[in-house]
Length: 71
Image (tube, rainbow, N blue to C red; front, top):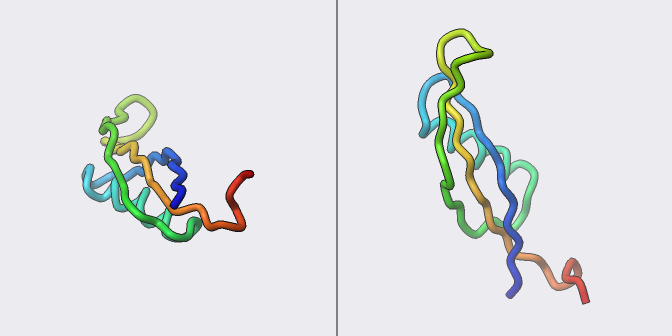
């Protein structure tokens, strides 16, 4: 099997967990064959938003199907 990883950044005004869920939800909507998710970092944006914006950088891995593999 061959896997590909992509980095996504989820956002939430509520919590880091919701920010991670935001990224996973987007991945599930746009990618197939998801296998795992790794949380890389977390941060809070203060400057350009009212209140706080929680951000989570995640790496999602998905299986590359045979027809998509590069030869």
